[in-house]
Amino acid sequence: MQLQLFDTHLESSNWLADQIVDAIIQKPNLTLCLASGDSPKLTYQIMVQRLIFKEIDYSKFHMLGLDEWVGISPDDTGSCAYFFHKYLIEPLALNKDQFHLFDGLSHDVDLECNKMDAIIKEKGIDLMVVGIGMNGHIGFNEPGTAFDTFCHIVQLDSITTSVGQKYFESSRILDKGITIGLGNLLDSKKVILIAHGEKKAKIISQTLGNEIGRHLPATIMKQHENACIIIDRLAANKW
Ligand code: F6R
Image (cartoon, rainbow, N blue to C red):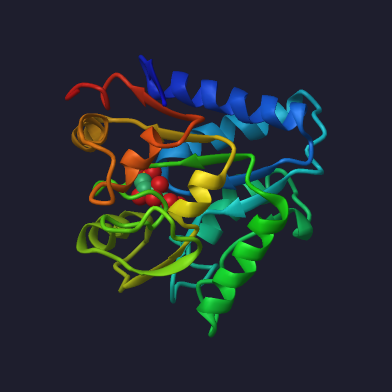
């Protein structure tokens, strides 16, 4: 696993946006699996600008949404689906067949998992971009999750349900999540984890310092053969 330090979040976001844009240029029909949330938001904004202003053909890549809150509508501004529409799908005017998101309101969440797993099985994941939760989760793979799980429904832990309130305009009952699994992550060709800010310093230091294990899902990055963690100076200051 590589570790890259940047002075600022803007610098790491610029670097990551370049990585994604280059990956699209190299393989126009690649499959990207992307996290939502504060960590990659700036990256996506920069990436969208570059794709448009450099007139790159981005009509062939496929995007998979990493996770979703179960029971939350895609119209809710705190949902992952809302995020993907706002920062990627609408600015890039992606075709309906260019992206696949979990439906948090589905009556058959197991079917949602099966559909996503089938797409991953067919296409593979070329590049995964993830964040890290305050408890070390990746996607909604909470501490204790086995490294060989594929898409699944998760009982969210109390850190995730309380930190998750930050995405919503008013408080929501968050209980379960639906997520692409750690087995899918290990099978993907490349994974980049981005983290920034002082609040992530402790969990980054624990991730880098701990042995690989299911107690801290983000340690899986050290098991992946083509993984990179990128952090700014603030997120590095307890390491
Ligand atoms: C969101 C996701 C989560 C977040 C993590 C960090 O799609 O997969 O694992 O990446 O909770 O969230 P932020 O980036 O908001 O600090």
